[in-house]
Image (cartoon, rainbow over all chains, first blue to last red):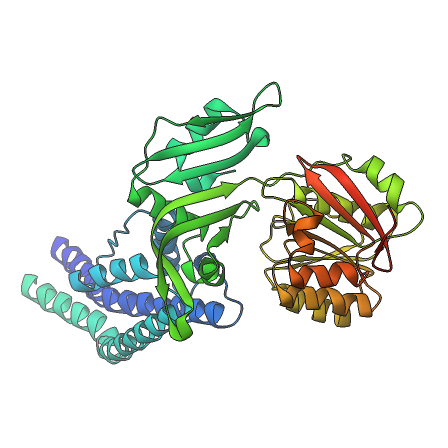
Length: 158
Length: 289
């Protein structure tokens, strides 16, 4: 009886872990999608009404964790402090690049700022595209692999 | 108020005086912060703070002034100033970057700032207004050297015309000093066009906003004069200011002598410390008193 209960628990935990392993991919994708939105908002605000960076910070974006991150970034940004991005689903190099991005916005003339935002927009869009393809593969695979592994362990226990 | 200066400078300033008594703040990197203010006896005093800012402090002040969006203040920086959210005009001094056509593209390596604190003094012109504006609304040109109170004068005169004569007044507020982003009361019947040049303000204002009076600060050149002439030809009175010591000064400058002779301004007054020292009344370009 104990073996059956353990086996079921292991299967459940394994499935959850499998799902969590994939979640980091989908979180990364969601973060970059929201960053694209943010960048796009900056570009639109700059091009026509010449609204400042503050307006883009005050909007709500697609991914809730991005909005939380943005609140922290906003507080640092408007106090002239460097931003530190700590999201684990982002790679080290990506965290640094995003920190640099938030350190650079708002510092230039309209022409230079527009060029910079357009360039960053293209880079972020590339990352989103590559991430979407990767996430599609892993999205269903993760829980399935986790479940399979759990069943194997279950069988071994039995 | 003065949040953009940062806590160290701001707190030390407020240990000397309060905001209402401040008239000017000069921030100079590696040299000091110098303030001018009215003391308890309404005498203009000057002091230097103990804090000595460095270049990074000045840069941070500029960034905060721009609300961390330099491109928002790009056009005003090209002209050598930034207007704060509270309407303080901050003159900036540094290295000019010359762009296409030999024009200043931006100012970098900013080393000093001159912050002028605008004032609204309601009621101080009531006797002047009662004496000269009871019968009719008149065009008025205010002449004074810097710090004479010209902007405060026309702000109040415009407000009185708007509220007491219930007349539509257009404020062409090139640097947002007249309205200070809505902080100052310019009257119930007033429209305010902010951050536009006078040419746009006059021509488009007359065509689209149908004012009876236009108020603007600092007539500088021929283009500004043409705007005033256009307004007058459209039946719109102008209240304006001009740098100069006295009327004779203006008469020696050809572009302004023409406008005086043209009879556009019914009143030309010489201002000192907010008070009209001499008031000249014109009728059709002829000085009558």
